Length: 296
Image 1: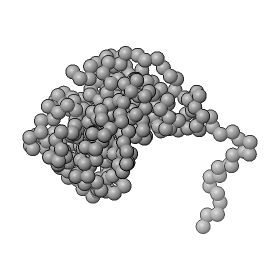
Image 2: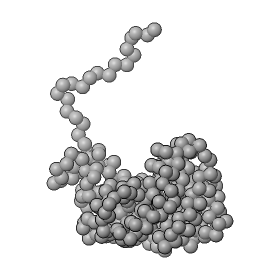
Image 3: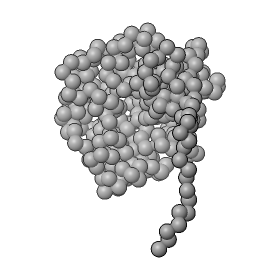
Image 4: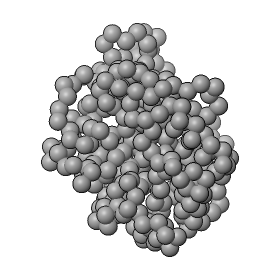
């Protein structure tokens, strides 16, 4: 038996100072972003953000998860456009299935639409196709695609007046093309939809494979929404996306000093930080891609 210590990490000195955090983002001036400004949804950690005046005044669209809204007795009244995220990744990663029935989800979405107002779109109960999710569900990519298409049909049947957003799921380029065909086989032409979610690419959004997938679907005339797109991903494909959303600012705030004037230890739930982060994101996009009209 080995009783020697092979690697010994010395304890920090008693007077050692904690590693300094990076500075907070600078509150940059507004540049001209064309429609990319309008359709870059900012992930909101709390429903109350929907009623905050600063988001309404700056016309910043928000993205709020069903999990944040479900079960609330009263709803905020939105002052800015927003989209409903279904919380699918959390559902499947924690339970290996959807625990929310289509009836309950459609009923909740209707309540949000009526009581909160200004809802642009609501994501369906799609089934992600990352390996870790497939391991949780025990199903194949094809099974997840069938269930995703069925979700759109079910929700449209339950309430076709809500702005349901179909989602294309898969992993390889052939998977995504097959999913488009599955929609077509049930009479849904995705090129006629206002916007279509592109699933299972957020963790590889800046890779050549993900860019090729998005380029291919864009060339078919499908207007796409990118779930959870960060700075690096948007720099590659912002000109090909109709819209995107991101909550990355909150994690970014954990590694940065608070904004000037903020008294909390972390800005991970701070509207001021979120606004500055979003402005920095938009300013960082290449100029030739900022000025492309995403509604074209």
